[in-house]
Image (cartoon, rainbow, N blue to C red):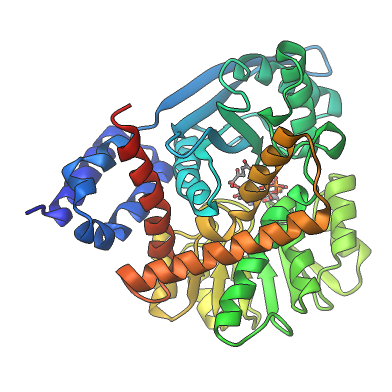
Length: 449
Ligand SMILES: NC(=O)C1=CN([C@@H]2O[C@H](COP(=O)(O)OP(=O)(O)OC[C@H]3O[C@@H](n4cnc5c(N)ncnc54)[C@H](OP(=O)(O)O)[C@@H]3O)[C@@H](O)[C@H]2O)C=CC1
Ligand SMILES: O=C(O)CCC(=O)C(=O)O
C-alpha cells in the first residue's frame, strides 16, 4: 500500500534541500505537489513508478554568456538561459524574458509552470522557458538588436521547429522576436517554426499579440457563464500595462466590463471613466513611454507613484494581475477582500503568493491560476506553429474563435477535474491535476528516456 502523503513529503524535502535559495522555483513546486495528492491517491501507479522524482528534474538547463556592445562602444555582458524542462508532450515551448531580475530560480519556476499550462491547451507542446538578466528599459533600438543577435548566436545551438520553440514574455515582444528570428535565419536558413510571436511579415499569426489578454478574459467569461452571469457592467482592476494587460483590458471592454486601473513598475493610474485602451497602446506600444504619461493626457485619470494598484481602496468585482510573480501577497489580498472582489484571474505567471491564495479561498473569492487562465498566449503560439508548418495564415477571426474554444475547454477541464478529485471550484488543483495527468501518462508510455 503506497503512502502518498509520506511520498510527497519526502519528495518536497528532497527538492527543498537540492534547490536552496531558489525561492520562486520552490514556491511553484510547493504549490503544485500537495494539490495533486488526491489524484495520486486514486492513481498510485505514478507513485509506484517514482514518476515525480523524474518529472521534477529539468531535462536540460542551459546557461550562457551574452556579450554585446552599447551605443557608446562599451563592452557589456549578460547571462542567458534556456530551461528545457519537459518534452513528454512535444518540443519544448515557452517564452523568453528579458528583465534584470531574471535568474535560474525564475527560469525554473516559469518553465515548470509551462509544462502543465502547455498540457492544458491540448496541443503537442513540452515545457520550457528562457531569457536573460538584460534590462531593455532605456536601451536604443540598435542596442536591443545587437543584444538579440548575440543572444541568438548561442541559443540557436539548442532550438529548432521540432526541438524547442521560444516566444516572448516580459521585455520580449514582436520587435525582439523579429531580431532573434533574423539572427537565427542567417545561421540556419529560413525555418518559420523556430520562434512564435513573430511579426506578421515574418510568418507571425494574427491574434498572437492579443491572445494572452483575450484568452484570460474568455476564461473569466466562461466562469461567469457557469454562474448565469456575464461581464456586462463588471468593474475590473488590472495590473501591468504591457502585452497581457493591454489586451485583457481591450477584450473586457468589448464584452461590456470597465477596467478602471492598471499599473507599471513605477505606480498605477486610476481612470474614473475607464482606461482608454487606444491611449494606453499609443503610450506603451508606440512611444514605449512610462504609464505616468497616461494621466498627463487624460483629465479623468490620476497617477499614483510608487503605489501598488492592489492597495487601492475601490469597490470592484474582478482583479486581473497581469504584471509579474508575487505581486499580490496577503496584505494586498486583504485589500481585495475589503474591496469586495469576487474573482482573481491571473494573466501573469504566479502573481499571487500561496498564503494569499489560501486567504482568497477562505473568503470565497474564486481564484483562477495563471497556468490555466493565461494559457491563451501559448495556445495561439501552438496555432502559429501549425500555420507555419502548412505555410498558410488563418484570418484573425479564425484564430480568435480557436482561442476562445481552447480557453473554454481549459476552463471546463479544470472545473470538472476539481469536481472529480477534490473540491468544486478549486481551479488550482483542477489545473495541476489535469495538466499533470497528460504529461505523466506520456512519460510512462515513452519509457525511462
Ligand atoms: N506575453 C505573453 O504571451 C504571456 C505573458 N505571461 C505573463 O504575463 C506577465 C506580463 O507579461 P507581458 O505583458 O508579456 O510583459 P510586458 O513586458 O509586455 O509587460 C510587463 C508589465 O508588467 C510590469 N512589470 C514587470 N515586472 C514588474 C515588476 N517587477 N514590478 C512591477 N511591475 C512589473 C511592467 O512594468 P514596467 O514597464 O515598468 O517594467 C509592464 O507594465 C508575466 O508574468 C508573463 O510571464 C503569461 C502568458 C503569456
Ligand atoms: O507563446 C509561448 O510560447 C510562450 C508564452 C509564455 O511564455 C507563457 O505562457 O508564459
